[in-house]
Length: 430
Ligand SMILES: C[S@@+](CC[C@H](N)C(=O)[O-])C[C@H]1O[C@@H](n2cnc3c(N)ncnc32)[C@H](O)[C@@H]1O
Image (cartoon, rainbow, N blue to C red):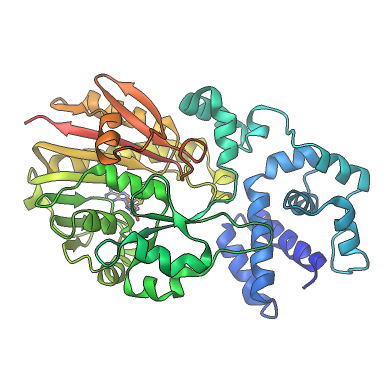
């Protein structure tokens, strides 16, 4: 396909998403099924355009002076490195290309990165300006902009099967480098231009379990949870097992790990993943299992709570435009409920790590405050001290907030170059 056809396809997909209010992954998949002639290079170029527009829809519209999908896609093409004159030349005579905006408009667009201020500059819906400012302080616009950038592909070496150096050697052809924070992490840089990330899942190492795909922020959250050999650990919101696998690896399969999730569907992939990773220390519980024998018997409960995913918008940018205040309120109610049902499993003197992949204070520090207010006999640990112990020599790369004697941590793309993750450690008195 020529550039004009790719631009037309991106416009079609964006219009389809808007008309049918559907997630980007579904719209892209459908387009691929009904356009089987498109090669893999076309698909990734079209996908990049769609994702770029979704990440920066508002600032692109402001700079372009119009909101139609075609104008936004043209803007994304220019931002990805094609000058307006070269763009005009590339689509000249291409009958598939949507009408090009006026050349003065394209020149003005390319000459300015300025997209006003507040929510528009931050590429957020208006209602999120206040929660972002309350969560991330004076830097909130820059923080939100970093959430609108293309993400890297992060991997975690599975120490049960290989060293990080061995995985690095295997993935050297893809330009994988060690991540700066996680001792197990590898990173393949964000996509440039029309490119795409390698499909690492077909690599031998992935097939035999020497590495997993996992954002460095998620790796750090699992590391900070501090599971130790010999402990009993309950991963209460295990989902597909991303953190369960990391917990098994960090303890060298020498902790007893119980994995639970309320949703069978989400839990389903965990079996294959555990087998591939050689995580033999994990027992998986189905949603209807009776967990009451574990009450008061767990050293460490990990609550990787259901959340808005506001820390992952680099990877799921459509979600930020769909999120509503009502959904946020529903999530916080769920978080309180999950914390209330998970806490009784913690033994006296044990601990509960509360993690989300959100940057919103409402889902994070505010939930910790609500938990502490409702539960006597619990205290918040100092997250900064936990970081120093878990990551010796690694400079702090987080936002922190003190609550009472303790402190909570928030990782963000701007601060830690990871997805947004929140971490708090709650301790039950002995
Ligand atoms: C953020 S996801 C977990 C991701 C997973 N820990 C990982 O690292 O791959 C949150 C999970 O919480 C689960 N969940 C929601 N409500 C729950 C509840 N009341 N009890 C247990 N799990 C719940 C959801 O099904 C979802 O899988």
